[in-house]
Length: 574
Image (cartoon, rainbow, N blue to C red; front, side):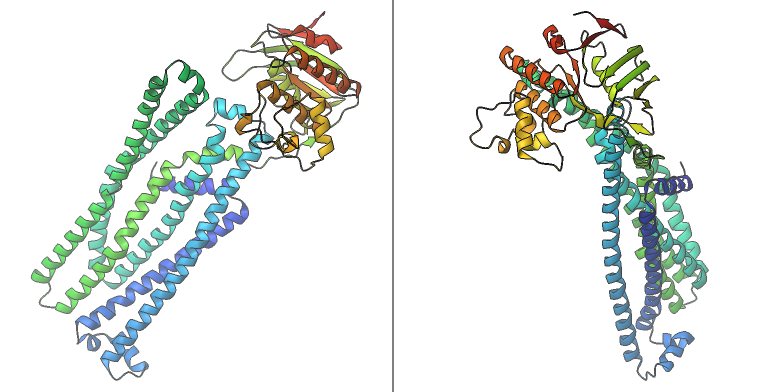
């Protein structure tokens, strides 16, 4: 990918990822940076005659432009004229510096807002599309697109793009200035800087890109090993396998760290090239002064001053252009990761929160992307107020079935119908359901926090009733049970308490349909009996229940029971 393709890719990515307001702010920033670049040229250009006036006392007589200004401002002393010019230039640079500071603050604020916006939009879109599992299974991962990619997009693409635009403006304006002022300096600078730029671009850019891509791969593998290790922390300790998992992680971490350090070392190459360019330029100026200047010391001084300005501003600008192009290429992958999860939906789904007659699954087929079909030609009808049981061996697809029913997964073919309304891109039935999974999600907070679970409605009596209906008890509670802290991921709760707390959450949210996936797997017989009586009470209140279980006695309260086996759902006679 050449420089032109890199810039076009970045520009296209910005148009797709940034909101219209953010695009407008970006254009304003680029305009401000261009004005500052032009101010840089004016400031640097004004230093040349001042330097010549200080070094050559006869320069005022030689320069008709300076002499015109001298007389127009009414000066009679060359020293006073020089002091005034120096004060004006210092004031100009001070104002320019203040404006640059405020522009930089505006850039920082805009970049932070863009990262925050992308992260929030990605988070919301993943939940809207129910694509969490798909991202983790087939894509870069939820954490990557919501947390890391927005930051890397801003730090590795957006800010370098702004730098690229401003530094390119500096290079173009300075080149035009030198061409107009002295073609010799232009050809000298183009020859030296162009040659140095080519060398760095040729030998460093490709290697830094390769190291960046390799480092990203090692990073992903190392993080995966860390996640595996933390997920199986107890098993690793129990079996004394920490050395094995540590070495696996460190092997990838070594590749990640070495790639990053090598890339950092290579980024110092432009500085060394700049040193050589400056030295070669000085050498050429000395040769020119000695052999070709005809003792015209004023001309040599002018050339030296122009070259010093070029080294001071143009070489760093060229270097930053090169580094910005490298960053843009390395971060180009963030466009592809973010584009599908921040794009605006072309339609607004209508949420269905109630039904009057029945929910029907008709001719459902489903398979994950890299696996054979796990549900085939499935048909199921659930009447309002009915309690339906679903049984089957582990891995038969029971949890997948209810996620298809909720609309969390989309079938390869077939349809889910609520009353007479088909669930599709225009309609969602998620609000109909409350789901209690086998591994309840418990947040770090109080019992009340876990019951309301983000709801703005916090009715104490309703929370206590939900806890009672779920048969939740906590003898350790010293006072108000709702204020008791459950610990990180419910560390202070037993597995059975976690299940009952999650059930209280489902009851509190008062959904039409409660889906219970192995609701009594972690309960003792006495608590299980209490739970069944409360589930029966919910059924009598008109709630529709769907119970997935292995234990046959759970189905005693069910109106109908089905077996999921060999991809098919068939009625089961209890």
